[in-house]
Length: 88
Image (cartoon, rainbow, N blue to C red; front, side, top):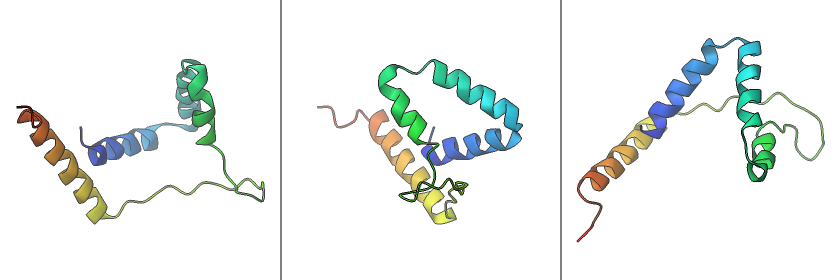
């Protein structure tokens, strides 16, 4: 699945969830993380910067051109891989 399609689908699913459902899903996912991945996962939720103040994170907005470019890149990679990926 192209990354732009994946992000669109994820955004739609997250928007459809109630806050409690999202919290439950995140905690269930976190419980299954290996020790080596926990710090990176937790860092996703860090907000505020050097000041230490917590700020609400603003959702990233992708420009339509960026979405198209990501889809084109994914399609090119898929085509390359289906053609044998340069295998001789």
